[in-house]
Picture 1 (tube, rainbow, N blue to C red):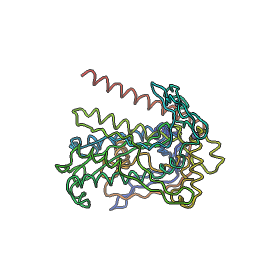
Picture 2 (picture 1 turned 180 degrees about the horizontal axis):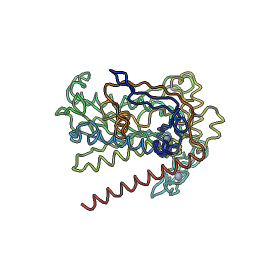
Picture 3 (picture 1 turned 90 degrees about the vertical axis):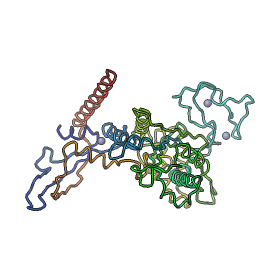
Picture 4 (picture 1 turned 135 degrees about the vertical axis):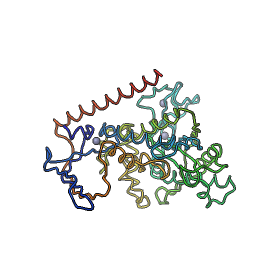
Length: 430
Ligand SMILES: [Zn+2]
Ligand SMILES: [Zn+2]
Ligand SMILES: [Zn+2]
């Protein structure tokens, strides 16, 4: 019970066997000794740390909390980041995938009205006069799977990370040239930092939300140059999002594709207001996405696909299944081997992390975990050496322990909710 409580009710804890001994570095005296052989159950449970709510709700909550603090520190300061960063040029941007073919869409009006009617080469109507509810199963599905460019969709996913890298490089280049600088001198004058998160849309294409910030060359502690304004940054982001492209490796079957961002681009300046409510909302918005796996959004599965039969058996829409099959087939072509499309068929070719940040954006997950360990009393004592030896002996819970863990997780979630409510009431009372 104590161990399950210590893992916050983690649903799939890792079981370790071993010991840690802390010794005085000078005298060699044993200061602390922990050995699982003297513990109940003879093992130590540690959190699974899975970010997905569908796999482990308590660990995903913890991860979302860390993400929130990580993104927030880059907007408002804190966690060793100066609060002066809130006066820097900062944007919240959304970049989308381009169109790979018309899909059904939700909205107040008809989906895709076509007064003249007409059919595609496959004999299917090119329009749709239905008004779809946002949660309708058809939303995001192509009007005609034959017309939809599944190859481009999967290859775009596979290159989205490179496209993002080119985008950030091009933003720096654009800023440098509009300031009259030699491009290679940009890093001596300013530094661009970001945190981005990927999200699957209804059509199972990833789009990207990111916080972008402009600092001086030394990063968060440094003022940007006078030319580094929010307007300049916005212009650079817009220009680069339209300009950058990635060419796919040439092959006899597909040829070469030029992949770009979609035309839907949003770049919203974040203004420094007194209470930082805007920034809090952005941080919470970003944190929400990191707990979602591909399965929650209906775009893929949380597990790797190892065969064509796995794809047939997956609980996904026909559209997503076709994307998986396309990734599998393309993964068999030698020109795409480096993209490892079969390994990433379950995420439809997208192989980036859900959250990516530049080094100087803010703190790290590791620093946040260390801070929490310190807060819980796991303090590293100076002038000591630690002798640890651990091995993996299993994972998960027995059915009985799983019930206890779920109960503990619920209690923690409930007390957290009450804590938030009480804090809010306190603020309203002021
Ligand atoms: Zn867990
Ligand atoms: Zn429709
Ligand atoms: Zn068609």
